[in-house]
Length: 157
Picture 1 (tube, helix red, strand yellow):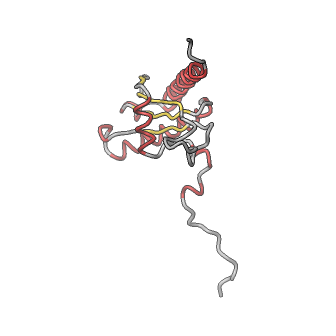
Picture 2 (picture 1 turned 180 degrees about the vertical axis):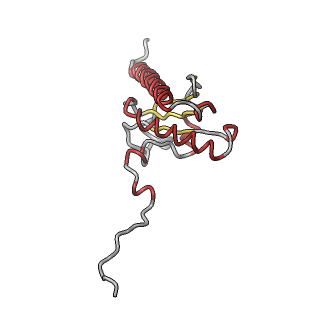
Picture 3 (picture 1 turned 120 degrees about the vertical axis):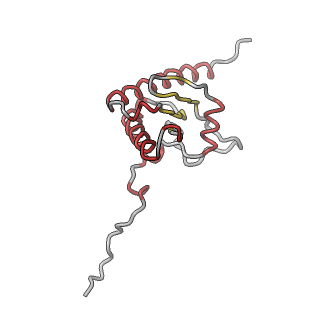
């Protein structure tokens, strides 16, 4: 005879098990990627190229952005088919996501970042990859702070 107590929900969605920080810090929508590509300039690091832009507080229609923590940075990854087969691309993305997760705290301004790793990331020692991501985030943070200061200054007349 079966026990009448309800069984725990074993089949939860993967997002339900994720922490909120893991959900918030990713760029997901195509329009967000396009906005960053359009507004940002291509920057270069040893193992990757990257784009970034300060995130506006309001959307194009003047309403506040939905599903976005105003002070939290968001990071997107692009790994194209030129990087190899799906197994290789997925491995690159997993390694990059982990390096981003460990270094995300160094970004303190609301920026949207797109990282485009080079193929050499797949064979790179993880500690080196982490340092590279940390250097990129430090450069982005410094540039974002400069950009924020110049935006706040009134135009000289």
